[in-house]
Length: 178
Ligand SMILES: CC(C)(COP(=O)(O)OP(=O)(O)OC[C@H]1O[C@@H](n2cnc3c(N)ncnc32)[C@H](O)[C@@H]1OP(=O)(O)O)[C@@H](O)C(=O)NCCC(=O)NCCS
Image 1: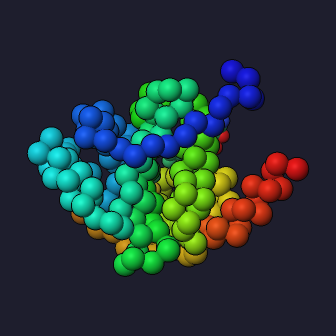
Image 2: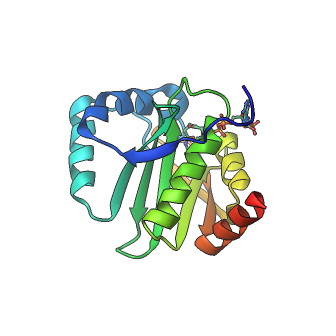
């Protein structure tokens, strides 16, 4: 693999992506880091997609790398503002390094296409890959909500909060291109 690989792009999720995205979402390496960790059935998944598709504050995206669907990104505006929370996961068989492309493509879409001002991210404190992922993308730490999430198995988790402003992202992107 050389360093010139394309970073990929995002496109809107379609109903034809439902089965594929459900397989990713139900994979143990993905769902263990979600707020809800049960195995999701197709009916529940369809209802989630229908509800999200009607919600003007929600944007569901599929990340494509070299023509292959490789990840999922969810952007949700907070009460109609230009601040959004995001969630994401790679396909469990995504190639090493795909996370960087998913992040770059999703942020470009969020800031340049949707015109958002800020992206807010939350990761369970033990999710080292997601913590590193946010830091690598330039997110600033916005504190830790201690014992904020009670998982279905009764274990409490702290939640690490991150934020990235459009101006910070633009500055870092400009510097990287010099
Ligand atoms: C969170 C997530 C998207 C982050 O992706 P990622 O792990 O950073 O993906 P990458 O493949 O880009 O990086 C994996 C490692 O390969 C390294 N890497 C980067 N480019 C690489 C390349 N071209 N070749 C080989 N390795 C590479 C990265 O540095 C990283 O190493 P590190 O984790 O030790 O720092 C992914 O782990 C995931 O989908 N997790 C499950 C769901 C989840 O937790 N979602 C977030 C909830 S808050």
